[in-house]
Length: 427
Image (tube, rainbow, N blue to C red; front, side):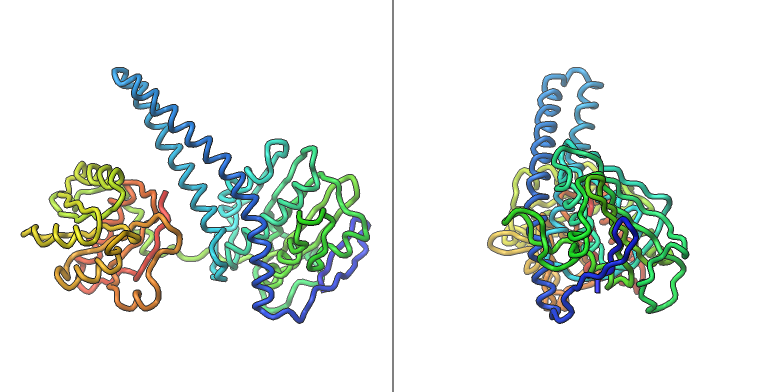
């Protein structure tokens, strides 16, 4: 039963189907995700076009002001910031679009909400104000992708209830025990609960609509404009997290949805992340080292090669895997790093790494990829050594250097084995 509470505080129950198989539930979630993805894509495309225009404008200003060092530097800094914005938008959109693998973890939900604002802003549009408030650093256990989809579902409902504009407030607070709903699962004792609320000043719902709000496929929207799965999916996610959901709504005054989530202790910081963070831009140990750079995009290969050379490395460049094999054959000295794209014509990065590992077993490998989830499959993972990192494009040069330094330090420590296939999402 999905427990909701109307504005007059009279509890009402709306029946959620209990005989859905896991596969059926996954299909329902995917259908709703595709609906949300279409709306997100439109908003992100608008923002991304603005970013491209900003980059184009500042680039032209830089060219026109090459003799004015201060102006040129300011323009270049704006370009760097704009690239970061674009990378952040695409990363979040791609993360949301992946097939939903429920990977539960303890994470900072306060930071998560702030991070989601960039993705939600294009969704609500210019006439709606989005306000996110958190009152401290709180942690919960769950799947971030599932919570992101639930948040998008709630915000979309609020937006649709305010065609003339309005305000959506997302708020995270600690919850007093006396205010907890009666249907909180008693699966295990927890320290406390958090309340994540999404409140709007839209059209609201009648008592009859509120009673059916969490029923699968129930919708008040026009045909083709809603699946009726939004609140059903949110409810299912909350119950998996041993939480509860309550809804208050008054016609003409708006709706408040409150999610009650068990709070978790802050997890211990991993040593690997601390090691990577300690010297972001230091390239001291890389001076004089040799890197084999393999990238089929010529302009990207040139700029990365120049940046690495500027850090004191010797760079051997190749446009594909076959060229890389020839380059390493012609180079009589040591090659310390293989820095390669994964998806390439003729010979891809994964097969190239396997071939070079037989020839140069001491060479360290770092993959770069512009596609989400392009790491090797399970069979490939078993065949690859542990000293491999996967960096997501676009890669900041300082983060790249830091990853190379970190890999170098770990492999030079006797008996050290870095984490296998650690995936870094750098901007």
